[in-house]
Image (cartoon, rainbow, N blue to C red; front, side, top):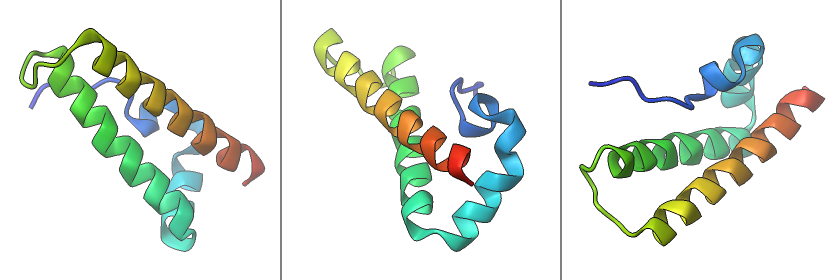
Length: 79
């Protein structure tokens, strides 16, 4: 499998342990992380042409990923 940019450990390299701990103890954080992961994979498939779509839809996917990343960052900052 090719490298997929924007994985959470790459986005927050100093928060890897905190992310692991939150995934184990916080169902909301776990759901956000899973949703981010799935969305990130979908964006990668679109970017590589495996899952063709419109530019508008791709932009919407990226906006959703950014929103999730912001929410995750907020939780990590408070942890």
